[in-house]
Image (cartoon, rainbow, N blue to C red):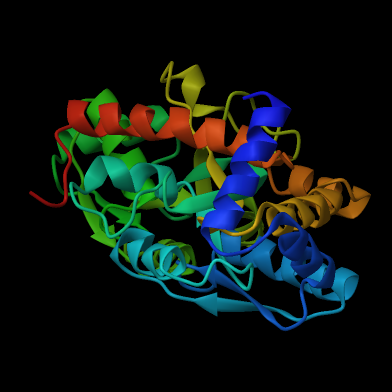
Length: 327
């Protein structure tokens, strides 16, 4: 959309809301004047939570106003996501979204929100690789072993996920559909619980982020069978990419920030500027590389285009695998 038309559309929207462009700009200049709540629709302890706490602290320091993290897990992240969709569009309640955001439209016929219409994308912060993990004492030592075990024990392999219908659940279904195997999916409240269950031997396999899994790999409690990424990670060069054995099996667990729809464009712009600044900091880039993540820092428009393409992609995968949570 040409910049002139986009500006006119923003101005018309603000007027329809009873706010003039000048008032909206003044509000953005003063923003934030009180604490901002970052809603994470996942349980504490996962990779997104670890990243979020770092960003929240930096935002608090840079904008001299508190950025609070509030956890609202449940129903495949739809509870926390719906909460933000209905929040006041003033920039003080923001959604911390992950890959579940683009997967849920594929799994639910009726969501309490529209993933594109009810949100204003701010930026995608990073894109995270994942590891396929097993307990260190498991006899499964490679993806070939894993497929062989799953085929000889159909349905007996317990695969941990971050909830029924979560991104990890659908990614796991895709893995077993591709390898023509079956597993029993065991839902947990969050990624931290999945990692703990793997380390304790309560489940056979599951996904985890490098930052959550590597310490337990180093201490001898977990083993990885491969990384889900386009290439091997620089931080784990000896770990094969699963696509080396399973061509086409590539996805990423992204991390981004969105606001309720109708949040004034100047506030979206200010938040984007501040968040992108964080993604350009050397310590953030180095930390992401160490943890197997690619730093992004997109524009709102780039983030919206990504979501518009990703949602139908997962919908097709869910349809092909005959996965749906609601009629």
